[in-house]
Image 1: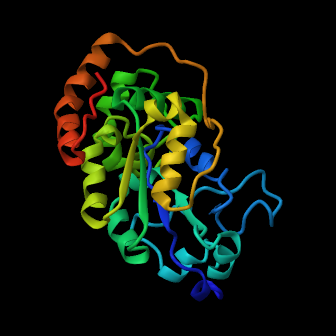
Image 2: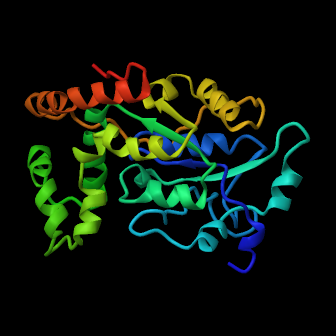
Length: 270
């Protein structure tokens, strides 16, 4: 906080989505010598790896000084950059895509930031999200369809008993259907930021070096030879019931069309 005045706003913010590959994308970008990790980094503290998120722009936000305290100083960026390609820094918080007010707070703290978004087939994303919460012990329901039906009530009342969770926590962690409604989460960011790069998760994993290279160009840091990066991968889960998959496909179809209109590109996962 005491040095926040010397720490400019981040040049980029990764906003998700959750279980879409944004973690792999963030750590892939850190292969570039001019894309700097959060401060303090694993180079300075005995951490396993660099942190990826600040996670403070939603739910009312934080002070600008506190937010900037997490990023490399202007002098550090100049030292790491070059005459033709300045160094940049940023964070990736997958929840920002749906966190209430996150886009508004971000536009105040980092109005010139470039926004990075990784989106996955929303049906596959919902199923992966459900299985993640089951593995972590946060989801008490074994049936995927029942968990989808319980989203609204749990976001309002939370969970009690063996798995206590406030409504706010349930809204973030147990909203499997909601977090695949990408157009609703993305629209506030596109309205506030001029430069937004949206990448399909399937395209990224098919050719990670290519897409990391395009992101580096988007960030203005020059070319780099990237290698593939994959984080948070899990063993394949059994497929959900066909009727649940079909219902989700019908639910997302008009939303995906709206998303395609918003981005002026095909975003169909059929």
